Length: 101
Image 1 (cartoon, rainbow, N blue to C red):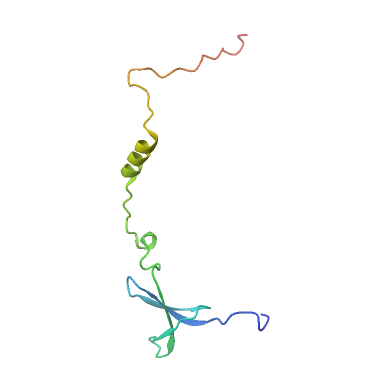
Image 2: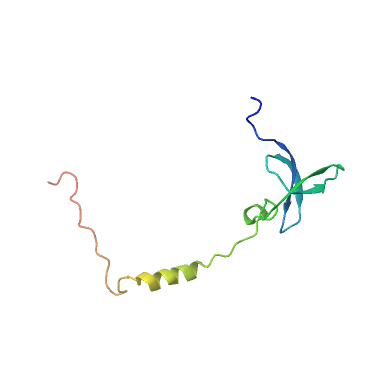
């Protein structure tokens, strides 16, 4: 590694704001606060909004989507276009059999 061109890569504690879970990793991020880790050393503390501990994809929490509301909004904006129930669907023209010509 070439010296003098890389940022400082050091141990940092990241804390999930919503769950309070902390984990120690290495990063180039710089925190203004410090916190003590279980090994007795003090490391920079960086708080984040979402981690794998609180993200719905990783926790398995289901997200309810209002798809019905989205469809209704689309139909109000652009109008619903459909065929009348009693009108038959047009059939494609029949193809001639092979050998007929």
